[in-house]
Image (cartoon, rainbow, N blue to C red; front, top):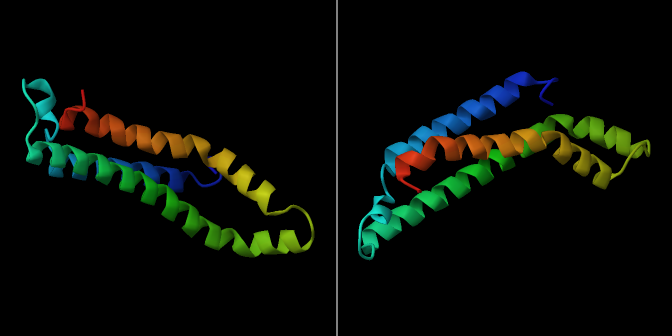
Length: 122
């Protein structure tokens, strides 16, 4: 996929960077309480957990919607090849996931690199 459609990979990376900047804007230094003495306040803890939740949902939705949208374009080819008994659902799914694995690991890594120091997850 990286060689066949490089624009999709660039869009995913751009989308990840945009979401990282958005998370930084919303949760700037949310976990700064980790560097001070004493227990965190309820607001500090809620902000930190909110940032974690927002990043988890962002990663999930970026990967989920990318897969759903691409599958719709590949569906006619998949149905035709499955009807001709070329392969089944399991080999298709496993090969698709293995070929997309570098991008699926790269995007969350980029998000974490953008956000980690700004939110103070040290």
